[in-house]
Each structure stands twice: as C-alpha cells, then as structure tokens.
Image 1: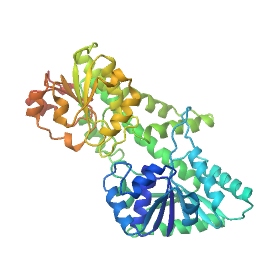
Image 2: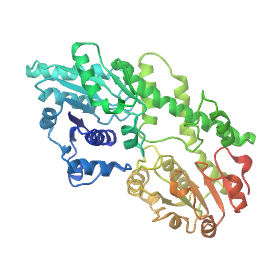
Image 3: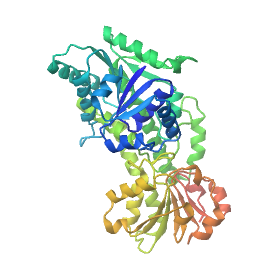
Image 4: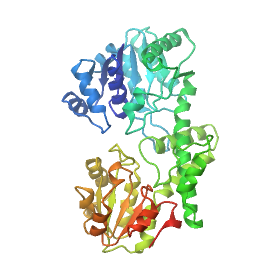
Length: 455
C-alpha cells in the first residue's frame, strides 16, 4: 500500500519505518529540512533501539523516502497518517495547531479519496475538527474529493517502540459508519492484516471512543505509578518494605505486576501531557477528575523525594558538597529528557549549594541542551558532564541513581566505595537489595525501603 506519514518525530518515524518493513511504500514528510537531510544521509534524529537498522534496510530497498515536499506527500499516500506533535498548551490542553495544519495541507492538494489517520495523541473531538479543516480547504478550492478521518492511536513505549509496533498487544481503530468510513475501515484492515494472522488484535470502535482510549490508557498507567509512589513514601514512615508489598499485591491477577514500581516519578512526552489534557477535557464538560488531579500532584511531589533524602542526610546547606548522578533520561533506552526527574534533582542540589557530576549512557548531548535551558550560566558551571559512570564518582560525597539503565544494575561496588568520599547510595529506582548493600558496607537509601537502610 502507498502510505504517507506526516511528521518524522518519535511516533511518525517508528510508524513509517515499521510499515515499510512490512512491504508498504512509505513517504515520510517533515517541515524540518535539517531532520530530513539527516534522515536522507543515513542518520536518525532520535534514540530508539533497532530503529536505525529498520530505516537503513528499507531506504536501501526503496520502500521509504523522506521529503519536505507537501504536494508530493499528499499525492503519494492513499492513507495519510498525521503523526505530528501535540504539545501541552498553557492551560494544559493539547495544542492541535500542527494536526490541523497537516489536515489543511492535505485538503489543499488532494484530488481523490484519501484516508486521513490521526496517529497523534489528540483529545476527544479532534476527528471532527480535522474533518472540518479538510472540508474547508477542499471547498475553498472548489474540489469535490471524498475522504474519511480515522483515529488510530499509538501505544508505543519509548525504548521498545519497534518491538511494540511489530508485535502489538492491540490495535485500536475508530471510524464512522458512512460509506467513506466503511471504505476506510477496509483499507485499514488490509494495512494491519499482517498483525492479525495469529489472532485478531484489532478493536474497532467509533472515532471519539478511539481518541478517548489513548488518554484513558496513559492516565491509568500514570495512576498506578503515583499510587505506588505515595504508598512508598508512607512505607518509609511506618517501617515497611515497598518491594515486598509490590510482590504481595502484584500476585493478585486483578492487579498484576506492571507499573507498580516505586521510584522518582514519571516523566517523558506522554504521561504528564496526556494526564493534563484529559483533565482539561473534563473541565470543558464541567467535570473535575479528582483522581487525575491527585495523580499529577503526587508525581510533581515525588520528583522532589530523592533530593529531599540527600538533604536530610547531608544537611540543608550543601555548599562544598559534590554528588554523582547516574541516569538523566526519564527512562532507559531513550535520550528523552522531557519532564525527567533528573532535571528536578539537579535543580534541588544546585539550589542547596552543591555541585554535581552527571552521567547517562545515551542522553548526554540532550542533557547538555536541556540543562542549558533549565539553568543560568553560573549554575551550569557547577554541573560536570562525566564521560563514564566511574568518572562521575570521582570526588563525590555520594551516588544518586535516577534512571534504571541496565548498565547500572551490576556495578563494581568495590570501585564505587573506593571513589566515593562516603559509602552512600541514594537509589531512586530500587535497583539493589538493601541487605546486600549493607553487607558491602554501604549506607543505602531506596524509595519506600527505610526499614532496611543501614548507616
């Protein structure tokens, strides 16, 4: 099939590459000439395991191309995926300017039937707005072409997006019951047929329900994280091991084990933005989503917990103190630092007077960019970007772990103890067993594990 992907960001590039991998003829459009030049030269603008190989393989086979030519992109694809950003607006709602601009561009160039697929995460009712924008552009041209707007939200995890796309647990498609909508459904069924050979993974519904499903899913996952983080903070007070509790409740099949890990709070491009957007939608309908308001408040507070533990241990005045920070990206296997807890931690420690050495296996360049935005020149001068985990430890009072990279799971504790001024570890992801840390001579501070802390 001939497919156009509008937007070569995280969702668009993964979607385009994976659809090309299935044998489709894919045209990827982006207005950013630098990004297109990078892709055409063999580069990748994001870090996503396996993606570079998929793109290279399909570029070599001629199944994927990258361009800024809007007219060519509209002419190419029978199915037009809109996969542009929907950043939060000032009031927390999703900013749809790029989605609607993409729709208008399609309307300004199409001449025959098109399926327009909202792949971007968009609030309920966006399909209607996309349809109106398309029709307005067609009317202005005096063109009587038909189309159908479909909602096909993505459920990709950063760091595992290629695997998630190629082996989906579900495919959600929303369409209307008009003749055009049924034609679009038939085309989407053909496109996703390779994923349904073993068993049917597609859930068919109306457009609004599909739009809502994406926000509901991310909000539920965010709720589980904040719930466990709030319990972990109480566990620290009452002398409970939150890891034991996690195993105890996760064994209940009604609850399950996923997203029950206590930690330093969630970040990234999806959960914070989507929780806010769903809250905003509710307010538009005079409804207050109390649980989601609490989820967001708990998460904001949780990002402060690691820094508070450091300050409690070393004092409110950290002038003359230096700390090592391992992990900057909001999660492993990505360089994404949007809403990352590490950014909050760096700010806390600097505000208290400390200096820090930071290290991340992948996100160092992105960290330099975002911390330059977060901090002034004097503050940034107190941040050292280390070249390795070991380098970060040199001269540090203690080690603070923020991101659960696999490279941090089995470190050389003897070397760590030698390099640190104090054998103290603050573990924001509960990577290590407190008993083992105590045996190794470390003072260990996890999240919700104070009953096992040794000093």
